[in-house]
Image (cartoon, rainbow over all chains, first blue to last red; front, side):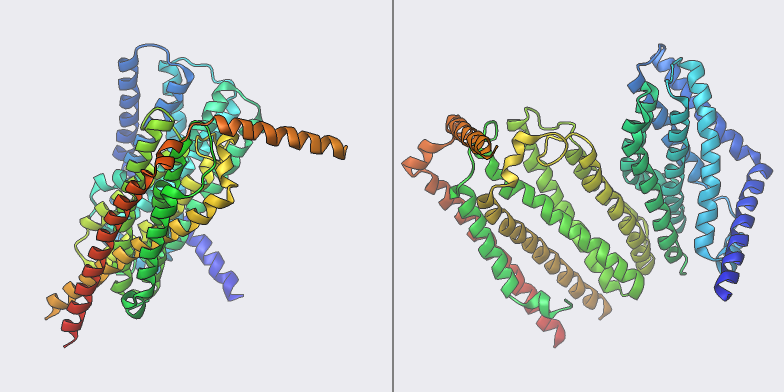
Length: 227
Length: 225
Length: 69
């Protein structure tokens, strides 16, 4: 019974924290706008550098590289923008595992939205016929999930190491290699419109990778707050 | 493992004896006759074993990371740190030897092969691990954060080098579609040399690691006095 | 059926051995005994490595003993 009560308070805390993150973001929407401008500018740079329509492989790779940089930029600040007092409050009264899950959830939401904005900007500048929009969108969601989950944990680590923002990229990129390889393969297949049966192993691998990442950050994050 | 194991001689002598065995069999032993590979198949004892030693040392790093998180004893962090260092040494050795071999059998020092990419990625991961360690001045905090990162990195790396190559075509044997190259997996003769060779190089790596750990413990004691 | 299988395996074995003999190996080097020169050099380098590792091991042990005193 007490276990159940613990679960409900944890759930309660979780939803409250996610709502808190969203509210914080909208309250100071400069961060949100700067993020948007950052990725649009990057896409525009890609456009003026290539100045032509891209073949599907390049298109796909470029899209995910821009997503990676946007994600790093967006998530690197997820532990930084909070005030010291608020952090202290979080880590004394809340369960750290709940904190990381809430932050990860929020970043997943943020990055998914950003991903679809990037996608529309991308298809505006580089016209490309994606054969299977359903699969591509699924890939976009799964990719945003993985990117956010890894980078949230890494930015949690970095926030304890004097908040050197460059460290997020250095520590995060090597960890993202397996995820990026799989997601690029998955969405490349979606662009070419291959059958679901062929793309299915990649889908399962993505699901497995994402679950491993979330479970690991759930288990490891509490150790970061033992000051 | 604290000090008795590290001081005892039997496993070090075993390592050296097995190394001599590896070199003897590596040059003189029976090997299957295969096209393209020819005599270079002997590199199995001198190149692939580097990766195996690296992998064992990385397991060591993750294991001691978990121990540190549970016990908060800086000794465990020391072992984790030094095993990552020696793992890097073996990883670089494996990469260089592999590039030489690849140049003569596949025609280029670097081919787009999942196995190769995976190991290059693991070297990058451990480079990032050391950058993280250098960024934190406080001992126990450094130990904690690098243990968390090390465990996470280890799992991602295992996915990269164990799971991904199975899903794509690889030039390396046993993965994807590469049957012609597959034969040496079945060669009992070579296996009888390969396994001792892996043990030999791994033990040598562990020996180097334990020496470094002991030296650093002496340094600690010196600082205390 | 069984006969066919044995026939098949015989054909396959004979083909593979015929194939194997075509593969060029360093047989002359072996028959001339020059390979032993390579082994001797490799052993020498390994012996030096072993000697040096043992020296370091001894030195560290000595230092540890001195620290204890």
